[in-house]
Length: 136
Image (tube, rainbow, N blue to C red; front, side, top):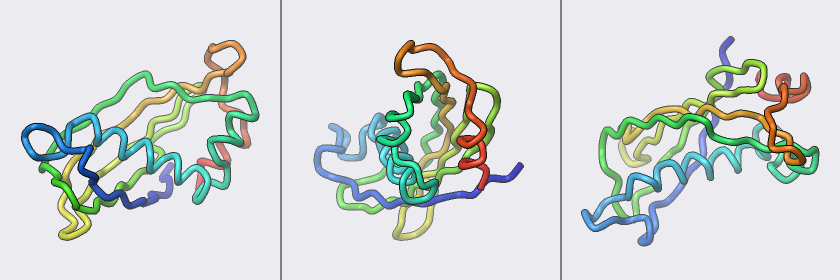
C-alpha cells in the first residue's frame, strides 16, 4: 500500500551546530520527530496529545539514518515523511531531509515504532481507527 508523503519545514538554529560548524548528527533525528509531531495534528487529524489521552504512546525500536550532505546554520530544510509500513503493533516511518534552497538530499532513513499502552508500557495492537487514519 502506498501512503501519503507529508512535508514540514525546519530552520537550522545556532544550538544545532557542532564543533565542525555543521548540524550535529543527533539534530537530524530531532528534525524528523518535530515534523512528525506537527504532522500528527495537521495531516492526520490526531495530535500527540489526543493520542496520549487515549492511553497510547510510541517508542522507537529502530532508527536508521544515512547522511548525504551537511546542513549549516540558517538553512531551512524540508522534512518529508510517510508511513512505510503498518503491521500489528508496529509502524515504520520513512523520511528524507532536503535543503529547501536546492532540493538536494541531506539525509534519509526510517524509524520503526512500537505502539504501547501508557498505563502498562507494553506493546499494543494498532486500533483499526489508527490504521485507517494512517492509511491516507
